Image (tube, rainbow, N blue to C red; front, side):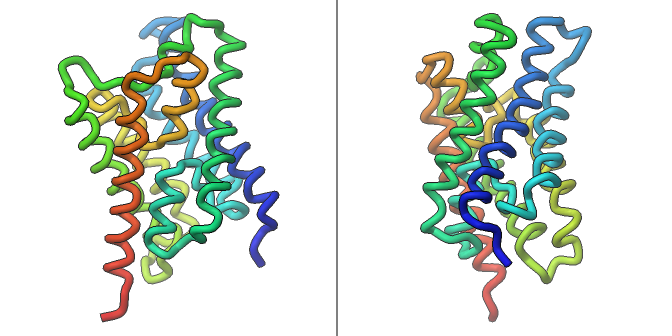
Length: 225
């Protein structure tokens, strides 16, 4: 029996908050305590494990999307109601904003600018856009399989591990290049709090395009011959 929509949206708000707050705290630790306390790998752990833990907490209620690109991708692949995409987006953005505000209040303006995504040194906007799209495409393929495809032996209980592991891996290898968002809400929330919108389009367009393509490709492989 599906959980009531109000509870599902509340789960998306709290789950997104928890996921982002854990990851954002890693960034705050780096910039307030220095690299001796935590390095980029630790930040990747925060985002990857934070996502996995929030899926353990709320995945059985809302599906544990916590990402507008995931909601759009699953809807494109026929694994999520298109009518609920926008409400999920609103809930995810609300959770992200609460997380960014909390970090701003706790650590002041010393950290808020560091939460904003931007391409790595020497990386063009186009390259960052393509990398965000490709990694989000792969991310949604993983999610659609481990969370929605009963044919896969690893479907179900293994989903939080696989999904969190993907974000840890993606943040580690691609974060220094593209900025490592793969999630429009993760980029929109800090941009609003820090009023820095210059690169934001990369982290909206790239993940949404990649997510939708991932959902469509999964639907192709899922379809009966």
